Length: 454
Image (cartoon, rainbow, N blue to C red):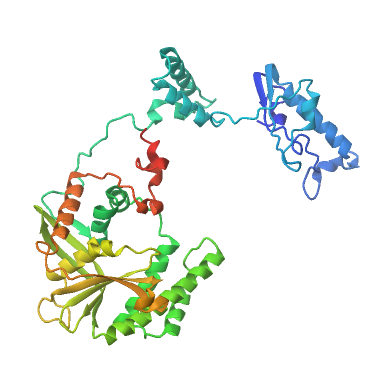
């Protein structure tokens, strides 16, 4: 509490913390702009002089120091720099020579740190039985403390608030019905198979993902504009696209105005790359057959039925009559060539084409064969040998005819992903995706979350 509120009270031990010059004494003028504190019975009083303010501060410090019946502890910080924090002049008036403590405390001087140390002591094999028992008793005493309303003062000291004391639970109702196909999207398969199944579960099933970020808004806007151009709804004209971009840009939330301007320039560059790629692809003889094409196919893999649903950003028909699937990316990083060759999401698109995802799409005769799939990185420029920064980096996956032939690995991924979901095996898999994961604070594979279960 403040020194003012402590007046008239007393305790065995009192700590007066932060006795710094500039705070004790605080010689700044009191009151507000209109100075109502100067109003008295005889009119307006004169403002306090610096000497009078110093005397008042000394009296307040005296009040704080005399609240202790047995022991008084006064602390201050002293920095080496002359213009840094210095102890108050009042310390020399206590009649005791201040003692310098140069080392840091072994733990933060807070209640939570005390509870953590006591908990660690109770299970420390190097501690004596008497010390472990004493730590447990101290925890029990802290847990029993209540305020005047009966609210626990140190709730973290009670074992009911501790994580990791019980065996993992299992829901009575299974996550998925084993008699029905396991529904997965291409992106979900990618996450389950190559990144982290725990991240997928918390984000997709628990729906604990935080609200969409500005980066996701960036990608959504660019995807919509690319779809409008491909479908013929908007002309392939940069000025028109930028006008459409500006009409929605202010609705995206950025941390600072400079960040909004920077991302607006990145969006312009991405749209320029898209337009050049769009024209280049038509010159190569591939024509747009569908955009934002929804599909829903059921596949057999490893004894499991997997229902794959999703949307293809763009499907193109090549001169050979094959179907080429395009997936636009607006992230800052791209996978390696080896990762693209076995990219689960692209592979699922190709298998879906073979299994009828494009049945009925105008321009194809019968059920087309997949000709390959590719990632078009609109935020990342192509290497110089492929056109340089003016064109997007394009990463191609070869054609897959089936998932029991050259795409056998796809069937294995589908079976593994379906098995994880049905068996509810959602274990963390550390990797570079951890840097942007929303659940690091509760993940046992990360230092931030390891304390939750240890």
